[in-house]
Image 1 (tube, rainbow, N blue to C red):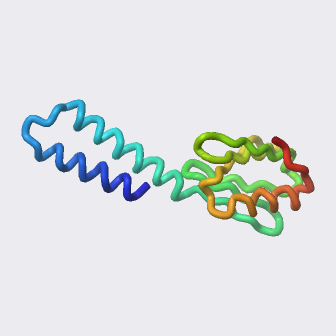
Image 2: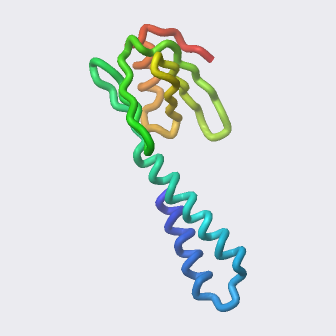
Image 3: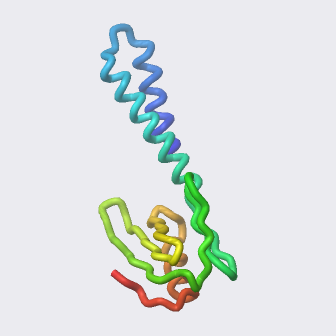
Amino acid sequence: MLSAAVFWASVLAALARLPGAPFGSVLSALAFLAFFIVFGAHYGRMAVVVTPECIVFCSFFRRVPVRWDEILKVEVRPGLAGTLYAVLTRRGLVQFSSLLARHREVFQLLLERARLAPSR
């Protein structure tokens, strides 16, 4: 994400120095730069923290601690951008993706500690 943001910042800087650069091109480069900055921040803050008492799902917008006995179901949803793990809890739905390092280990740990079977 960082390298993509740097690339689009460079493109934007080059377009800003170019006389007569089309406004649409400048706007497009700015939009791509904003996209990669926002999603880079989102993925940079995404984490799953495992403790003996609970699992904590962290994202850019929220931090959700969930006790093991509050987990009702875990669904694995394969997709074009990777695998999505949907964890249904008594407090609502939390999700993490295969972009998270060691996601398979987290999934297996969820099943073991919550005493669940995988659901597809």
